[in-house]
Length: 300
Image (cartoon, rainbow, N blue to C red; front, side, top):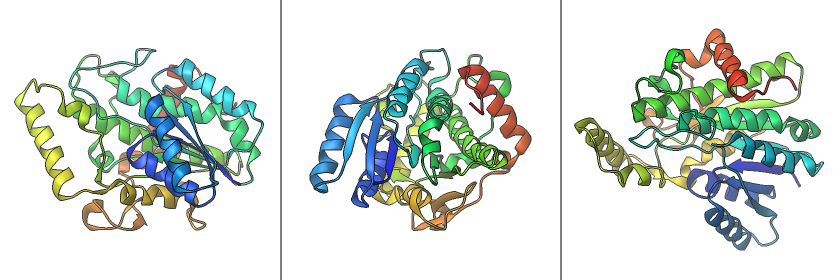
């Protein structure tokens, strides 16, 4: 039975990825900071697919020490890990928040937490015959940039800009991981995917905050409109991730999204990363920054 870890699997797209893998006979570990939600998600999946092996393990990607403990637990089993789905992410709050190490929270989760998790799970991934890592990005990667001079938005914080940067950074990480694994002649392949516009609870926290500026109101109105008129279900949004995770013809370095108009919804297809995501020099610079900020280097 192939084994997978899915971060952010307690709800939304991550839950549907875990459900899809379990239905196909995978042993799935749901990793999420939401302990109650994660345990319930695993229970629901086991109820939907009798005999499937789905479990929950708590993981807080906003704490590098917690990431290290989680990786040690998985590696300690001594079993192959065939698939890691780096799916967890947040829509940042209107007020800047930080990880335990002082990194901007959305970047700390989507990039630095997943970077640390992936590299520390390499012992388990290397035990698999054809290990695969899939990282979730977003449509907004196309309009984002990496602000290396203020990576953690300490001087100037805009929640939407922070979110966009985190999703571009996640995509760049996925592409750079594949390039480095290929250069090291390792069997591991790394891909990225995005769910288009998927109807999930990602905006609930932001919606509960009182807007501070007209811009905050307009961004939330646009978000709600997209969810109402253009969104597909979370299960449909999970399809590009599941394709990247399991399709025999998926190749390392590819990026999958919905094939419909503007990539909002539809069947999975291979889509183009932004020019910035494809820039090897920018990717290498971001990778080096990840190493400095986490203290973890490739190869191990």
